Image 1 (cartoon, rainbow, N blue to C red):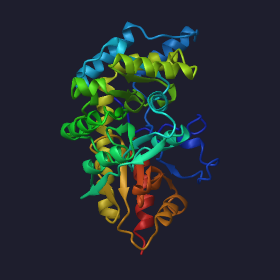
Image 2: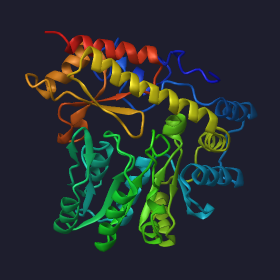
Image 3: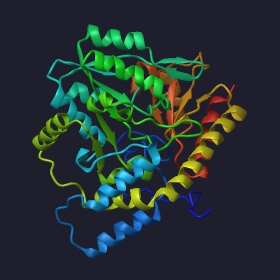
Image 4: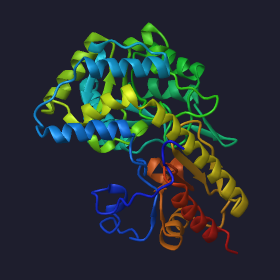
Length: 392
């Protein structure tokens, strides 16, 4: 293998939230940590080289994107998503959640309804609430091991709650769905009909498996493009979350100007120099590393499914169509409460996962595990979990 994903890198005492927050958060310090959504793999060598070059330069002044960055981003989205972007459509923010919060403030008023689809990435609800907007929920329907959208309820909630903005998680976290074009088209039709702005979080869009292919929301139609804000970042694709850099794509001039004004109100101006350097290298030179990483992650998904089916089949794997986050279903443990399941995983098995109800009540008796880690770490976590729950 040209790239080594099996070697374990010690991340303790490196300011890593995934590993160094255990004691502060009252978690076992010896727990296998597979909760937060970053990879345990060093990033692509081309990115490391770009960062080392900037570090050796020794000057870390104010930075601005240039043609190298725009060319890299446009090339990546064209080659990976068949989506054409113009330079002026791209805004930079420290992260996708930052952009979502700015969009909430820019396009809604206090008390307005903002729609999400639980179970979903928990900062959506938190960001809506802390900005004094109302969380409106169109629960996803879990059937036969797969999530679907209840479109009748989706439209009803928009009408009844006077929803102004919809935050779309595409691909879906934690459910692993890569939404089909026909599903996205229905969303677009409803939102256009009722003048609901779509903020599409597409941070996991590069990581799709098999026959599943991501559809950029703005690629659906001119109307969809003019009624959407597309939130992307190299952070999941290339493990760059700590560099605080995202690409926010807004075709509509008026929307883009309004969003930029709200970003300006925060005081954020120049993007991170290191984030900019890393992103440019990633999008221009990182495809080979990414393809290898994605293949390794998919093998880990299959390993997780096989291991649990053999050692503790009552734990069901919701096989993801996209992302490196796997949703584990513990509903067959009818004798245990949701809290008891979580406590046994954390305190007895000593594995730190993301508790399902963090993503909404719809996450009851689910757990989210991050499989973007060397196989030896994943196997140890699964061994501990299966051993604990296979007990009579």
